[in-house]
View 1 (cartoon, rainbow, N blue to C red):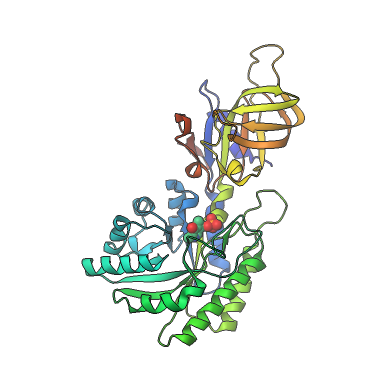
View 2 (view 1 turned 30 degrees about the vertical axis):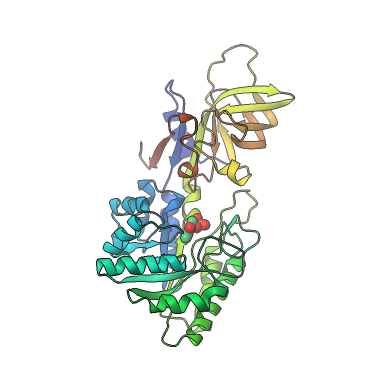
Length: 406
Ligand SMILES: *Cc1c(COP(=O)(O)O)cnc(C)c1O
């Protein structure tokens, strides 16, 4: 991995003091450009929402706002509050996720958010009862656990037994009940197959199956129209640096053809994107505190571990990484260092699960240098075990062209 020069400069500027350096550095430019790119290539009717669980830092929400996403996909009341604080209106929020509480649903119904995505029959009845109490109606989508999955995805959300959505096979029992709930306004379907998909044809195949399902429902239930079709997220990121970036233009073109083929023009097609918009906006940068040899292998211990950057351990992968050399003074003459070898990187936590990278080839590294992990803008700090061992949280530094601010 090549660390961009402005990120290297930021690290050198910020790591000068005696304080241990341990930080996420964010540059929001890639996110802004990607949202603008989607606006320019996607067919008519496609609406881009930011799935904010990928990174809820205010800079990401503000970038989404400035780049004019249609809205924010939330999965909790906390996310709703952050989105509204950053300038989004409740009418721009869509709410997906299992286990929505009464408090969360009440806020969403009272504030008339755009759509709530039903995950179960119990939830449909709960929303309807709250609407009756509050004397409101609510637009809803039905989330389907489709009978297909994408096998090589990083995480799948449909196929098999899942806590997400209602099984496709139960649709004929569930849908009539939902349609009969008088306070719910059925607007369409939500089918989110998988996250981290690099293959455009796999994701398009998912769209086709959702379109087929839409046609079947509309043929079977007269008067029912799915005027919103939500594909969830899923655009993948090339964490393994295999040279296979997701191709948004191929996806846009394929979707456009499909919309025409099915005669679906005039409907809303929702994309809830997290990872692809944000992964390359973040670097996790952590100081090397110790280097030692243990039974023939170098162990590198950093200031932050899975408490600050859990993804590599959780997904059992190495993120792209490199070293920023700071040429700190040695503590003693025979101090160990790394030169052209494969090593283990861990954090300071007292568990062997605390892995940042394993068998990763490093040209050169010394105690006091900064280990930098790329593609850390998505599912970074907030997916980590921040409370475990009570270490201070890393800084979050937002890069701005002419100044850096914390
Ligand atoms: C996490 C999530 C997303 C975002 O997925 P990415 O793969 O990061 O794009 C979108 N929709 C829902 C419902 C999610 O849970």
